[in-house]
Structures are given as C-alpha cells and as structure tokens.
Amino acid sequence: MERVTAAGVAYETEHQGLRAMEHHRHASPYVTIVLEGSYVEVRDAVPERCSPAVLVVHRATEEHADRFARDTRCLNVEISGDAAGLPAPGVIVLDDPCLRKAVAELVRSFYQKPRRLLAAMKRLKTVLIDQSSPKTELQPEWLPRIVESFPWAAPVPLRRAAALAGVHETHFSRSFRQHVGVTAHEYRLRARIQLASRLMLTTTASLAHIAAASGFSDQSHLTRTFTQRFGLAPAGYRRTFAR
Image: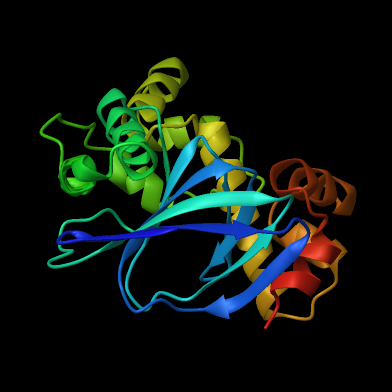
C-alpha cells in the first residue's frame, strides 16, 4: 500500500525472515517505523537493531544493508522538501512522549484516517527536527572531552574516566547517563561493538584477534554479545554484511 501527500510518500513494505538486502541507497530521505518483526541494519560498518521500539532515520543516498531476523513489516515515510534539521541517520528510541505520539498518529492516519496523513507527516517531521535541535541544558564542561578522547574500547577501568574528568565516580556515572542518554558501561559496550564490526567487515583478521583488539575478553565474549544484540553470531554477521 502507498499513499502520496504534499509532504512526501508513505508506503508499507514486508520482508521475509532470514533474508538480507545488500548494500543499497535511496534517493530521498526517509524514516522507517517497524510495525512487526525486527532486523539488523548496517551503516558505515556499524550495526543497529531495528524493532518496534525505535524509529530509523535515513538520509538521501545513504548506503546501508539489512538482515531480517524474522518476517518484518515496516511503514516507510519519504520526506519531500527541505530535510535540513533532521536527526543524523540511525536509530531513535521511542522513549519521548511527543515522538511516540507523532509516530502513533502517523500509523493510525495511514491505515485508518488517510485524510489526516498529510498533517501527521508534517507533525512527525516537526517533532524530529525539534528532537535534533541543540538543547539549552548545560552539560558538564568535562563531558565532550571525555566522550571524544577516553579510550572506550580499551581495557581501561571506567574509574579512570571519572578521574580524568576530575569528579567523583558516582557523580560521573549520574551526569554521564543524564546527558549522554546511556550509562558509561553501555556506551563502552557500544564502542566495542562498533570497533569489532568495522574490523569484521573491513579486514580479514581472525575473530579471536578482533575480540582482543576491540576490548572483549575473548572470542566467546564477542560471540555472546553479537548473538544477544543482533541475533547473529560474528561469523554469520561477517558473511552477511562484508563487502
């Protein structure tokens, strides 16, 4: 099903489970709402899990590849006109009430009240731009320095980050989560996953070497993490997404 409005085009897609889409591009910026199922999307050699709990943002001509864990149904919204101000490509967790409401209104309009679809599409675009606008809330002066320069993937205790920031560990943990949106432990794990993914998809290094180079305790730790996060062991992940 497809519906065309002055704000863009909305259309439904269905994908069979255990199928993959090779690296590809779309001419227009668009967002994907996962209605059922889930999939892994790889962009710039970095994987993200896409499920009904998130919204996926894509920029025009951005290259990505997908693997569908099971039968998956999505609602995609191509955005016409000026796309300036939209969030950076990637996954946005639907934990903000305004965004969650805008997504629900768009889905309801597409399937039940098409006359309201134009307004719903405009509303979603407005909320997304607002979400990506710089917030006036002041962040600690040490935060950008720690985020950019701390060796997150290396086996360095996180208490060293607090020491480099010059604050108590408890204050560091609380402030980091408040301003970054995830705990320092989760941020570290994501950094290790991203590094491991890049090494798997851009080198021929062994998985044991990659595990050690990206901060995992051993290959088994790397395998458990990828399987739990993406439903795909490193060897299968590499076969699916390597160029």
